[in-house]
Length: 117
Length: 114
Image 1 (tube, rainbow over the protein chains, first blue to last red):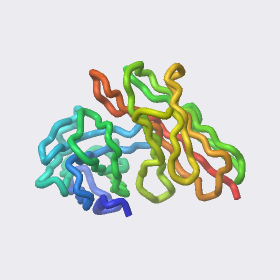
Image 2: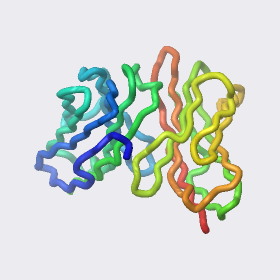
Image 3: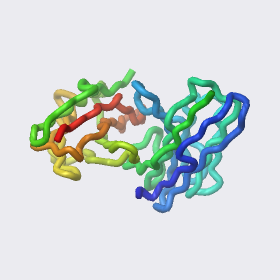
């Protein structure tokens, strides 16, 4: 148990569906992250939030829409996804403000395995 | 562009064998260095880190890594692996200079045969 919980663990959706991924951290951290993990590619940082404010968006397509209502919760809203978006989506958190990429230790959730049909 | 190279993509060892996984990076300035591990079906977790000080760092489960600045390397080692070390290992390098980015390697899949 890492203190970072992601739901659902698995998600299958069609290209016209709308779904959301949820992440919750119980560590009292101030920074939260969304990553995409695909086979044979390095971990891709998608979004970063510091104290609920988005501080980084790494050219992520608009079909991915993050939301951070408070420092403990992070959502990733999905709509009109493409098959190439199928991947493991990881949420992470870290102590203290994140500085463009992060030099702090990150604590990861178990991920949501997303399949887009 | 900055990059992190993990030269071994797949490693297969027998129990009690020694392990060394390579990690090289391309940035020449101040760096924070990390090794993360992902056991089958589990979350990514920190194995060890280097921020400053002694370049030989000790991590959990008997792992260690040595930062060699002149070689831009941060290789992971363990003298005697166990079956439970079967996992994916990721090296990550944080550029603490002007372009502050955390760059991840592709990962090395380690399988330890009992």
